[in-house]
Length: 283
Image (cartoon, rainbow, N blue to C red):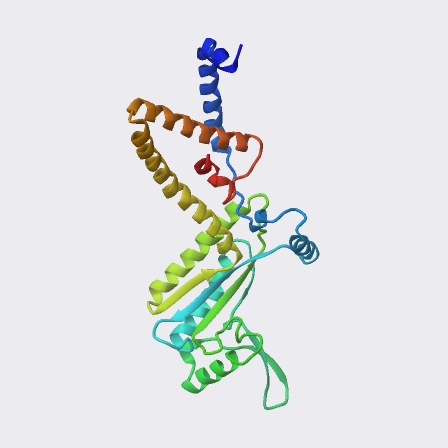
């Protein structure tokens, strides 16, 4: 008995088994886990990846968020803009899993007083009390000091940044959820700051946002590419088959195959990534 004969003879049990497998695959979708770690794109024996992991094992795992500030009206070294940087720097400690915050607002410098003593003081404290001469001096220091210039402050004074170090790894248990909480907290602080300082333009980057970009790109593709693919496929089937029933059957087979493949992968413990999440579209 050939396979075709077997399928025709036992068509109802085979159909029932197909429906059961499809239902089981759909059920598995609730257990889907997304791996947004960029290391998923490298092989286990990649020399650069191994060196990076060895570095993490020695010095610890961390991640970061960098928030850049630009004054739409020009220079960052105004009382208003310095206040914005200081406020965000102070509030950044409220961000979940924050370990350290660095900016020109909490930059410590050593100065020599009239008695010849060395004093450690922040670059500035209360921006509202600064004179024009003090603003010019702060600008000079920030744009020439090797710790700040080109790192946390643009050398032309057009931009300032706040770097937030975080104790959240790239991948691992709860990493994705922690990154979502961190981004939500950062976005909230930024929104509040922009309401208070309308001329402030803010840019967000860093490891947390880089990983999140993969998630967003994947979800965007699933949200828009998959429906487009289905519509194009329906159009092609109607054009070539010239049969509504044939088109419906073909679409059902394709969608069931895609869902079964995805659910089966999840059942075997395969985590979704920007590449594997595209499998249903490929299927």
